[in-house]
Amino acid sequence: MTTPREDFINLGSLFRSSATITFVIQIVAVILMIGSMSAYAVGDQFFQLGNELKVLVLLIVCVIALVVFLGAISVFVRFSRRIGDAVVGPGIEEVKMDTPRVKTVVVAFGLLVALMGVTGIYIWYLIDLYFLAPWALSLDSISIRIFGIALGAFFIALLVQIIIAAVGRSATRVIIEVLDADDSEFLE
Image (tube, rainbow, N blue to C red; front, side, top):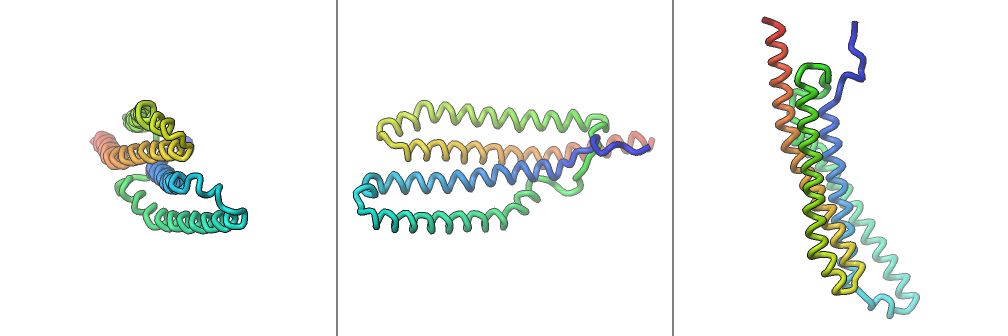
């Protein structure tokens, strides 16, 4: 009798996709930070230009944004496989969840990642509440506010990515040891 596919979890894919998602969030956050700081630097000078020059400036900004986005995609393509390989160690892909202790290990590591993510969000909430929001309010600048939010997204994604990388490697080792222990108990 074969085990249904629902009892398997692809840990390698789960850790790789989580790391990839956080990397994409970091890229978008950096683009938003650059854009918001550029908008703050230009300030009201843009609105003082003639309509023809406004169109030209917007076209140039679109070209620059597209070049930055294409560069970010290039970085993403170049480093996504390396990130995936760094997150998940060799020797583990699909694991049966009904294997004794495997589900416990997976759930415990998942809870650790979720708790670290919530902790990072709360830390950033406090930084934003006490420092960044008052700074943007004192400058009366939406651009600085967007910069603060993008910086928070970058910080949180980086924290979660670091945790996922550390957890992915250690989870791989622990699960392999659990599976090896189960195999050795079965053979005895």
